[in-house]
Length: 244
Length: 48
Image 1 (cartoon, rainbow over the protein chains, first blue to last red):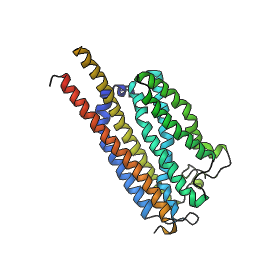
Image 2 (cartoon, rainbow over the protein chains, first blue to last red):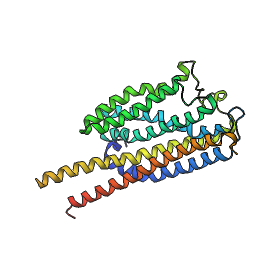
Image 3 (cartoon, helix red, strand yellow):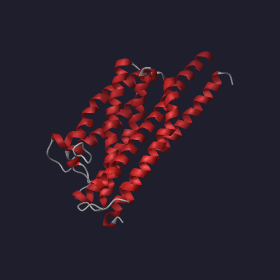
Image 4 (cartoon, rainbow over the protein chains, first blue to last red):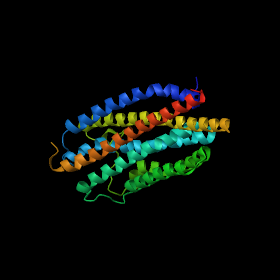
């Protein structure tokens, strides 16, 4: 069995259509556990007060926002190299999900920044690269909508996606590249000394698992929807030809 | 429980949960609408 079998739209829809409810279930379980634990059963931080509870929505949404773009780059490359339509449609399906996660990360960051930094916004390297990533999401979605021919749209959006990957990587590593700006380092790290305090760590990891599962469920569901939209277009064209 | 930052925390969580709910709701609504359209056109193709 090869992974490329799932490039067949029918096989993809049949297989992953069965998965979607289960992945939504895992997402609901993890989000329910992680967010309720984080909101109701973790203490205030000494330096941040109760605003520390914002990390349970801010950090996972930022994580998914960046990695959604990376996933789009991979599927776009698959489209450009192997011309599998499902991979181009998966990238298209992921874009609104990634954009929503970017909005959540930017909004929660601004809401947190106002009382903690004394400003809603700062042209900090990480914040700025994240804002540019958000603009790339908008551009990507607009480009798909603007080009009538789906293969041309897939080609051009794939190239845009590869260009935008620079800002996805910058959003993640900007705090390491430039030792300036207000944004603190990573909340979760392989280095235990850089992690958030133990009491916040496990609910944060569970929340992140929930956000990732929700992303997977949404992308699978939306990819199946995109496959069906394309099938509708093909069948409509066939019916029109038969009638003519 | 949230002290002086209650408004800050609740608005951040409110924005996040509302955005997620909207995204999931719109995704389900579109999936249902497209599936119904496809079923209809397949019935038409099969002469139903």
